Amino acid sequence: MIKISGTFTGRATVQTSAVIPDTDGHELSLAEVEGPQKCSDPLWSDVRITYWGSADLVAGNGPQRGYWMNRHANGETDSGTFEGKITTASGHVSMEGTWKYTGGTGKFKGISGGGNYKGRFTSPTEVINDWHGEYQLAAVKAAA
Image (cartoon, rainbow, N blue to C red; front, side):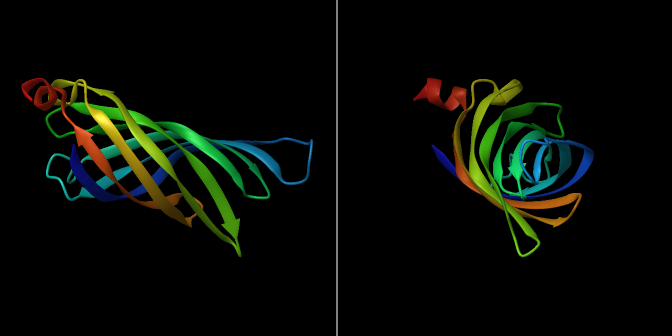
């Protein structure tokens, strides 16, 4: 497995939420976020990521989960899932959790691996995430 780390800066392109009247401050949220990645590995440096996430929050705290896709300049993709938690304290919203690869196209077909992420909202529509983990391309695994 190859170690990897990076930073993602994104902006919400779609956001919606529903207030659930069972308890004060309960809401369900859906969002699509996209932006560029900076990464220690040239395969992911300057790649654009889009993620689609949901959150079940009470008073700004609760679980999040979703899907992501990286689009590489040559048209290939890699994708996966994430899950974690969102925490709101003193007006600051942060998130942390785990991610894993579920597939890809071209050289990323059959990719495996995963890791952790930790981030924060810098505004109601902008997010910064730092992430790290490891991966293995299927072609490399088959050659071993």
